[in-house]
Image 1 (cartoon, rainbow, N blue to C red):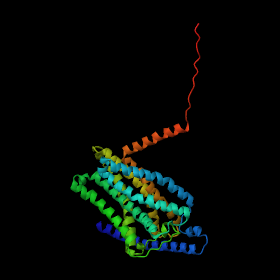
Image 2 (cartoon, rainbow, N blue to C red):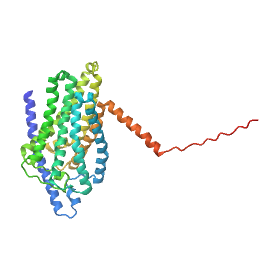
Image 3 (cartoon, one colour):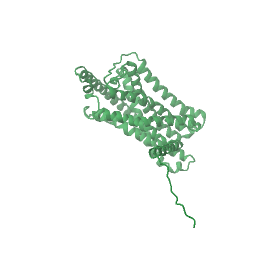
Length: 369
């Protein structure tokens, strides 16, 4: 059995490497075609994106990003502050990975999205400087893929906390099974993308008339780095999250009676619901993109599904926008606080809009006989 699994993994790795090389060549051809079009046309803002931009108009994308990003950022900061300021929530093991994912998503929401909004408005990267492109690449590649890696660990961690809680029963075990893996993952993500984006001695091409400066950081020209990023950083976390999340639901159903009898069932229930919500949002918006890539790997012509992949890439941002709201089920007190604040604000607004003036009541005089 082990040999069969090893053979399957090896075969899948070979397929992914071949697909990565083909995908990178296709991406380079699209960017080259776009640059040539820009150089040969006076209407570059329209022509540049004819081969590399989705058909959904930019104003619609602009307002979709604005409408969803603002409340998502507010919700993210609310959860982050709630976890940090509340001592009980700060020491709860099930909150640490959620906290790190929210922090990992913030550069995407504050840097990546805002650069996109500026690009949609002006039609080019502004300010047109290499450091802007480097920051954009770090947020777009490093933080997004870092979120995928932490999501996979979140699913694994839920198995540990629910079914193998003896692994976190004392300080030593908590360090080995909880804090150490989180520290290794975060350190790996930061070091990998800081070195690849900012420190690697190679020459990047900055195309200020394309989204994400052409999305061509020079580290992807190194075959080993590109293959490692595609297989280890992207594909394996998506597959792990899918398998482990489904496995958790199946395992909970099979051991429902034992779990329901546990004194910590309410905590387990919130963790299971939270994982189901965040994984459903993440996989439903990110997994189809990889399934189309796998279909291309199996023989589907590369020209099929290009527009769909562009739409799926755009929809991937909504997995980030919806993540804080899906995480709120773990924090009933915070939900209640937010609800009370919203209810407290609405009556004041209604009162200001419909002021009630003084009412004069005339009481008739009764004459005495």
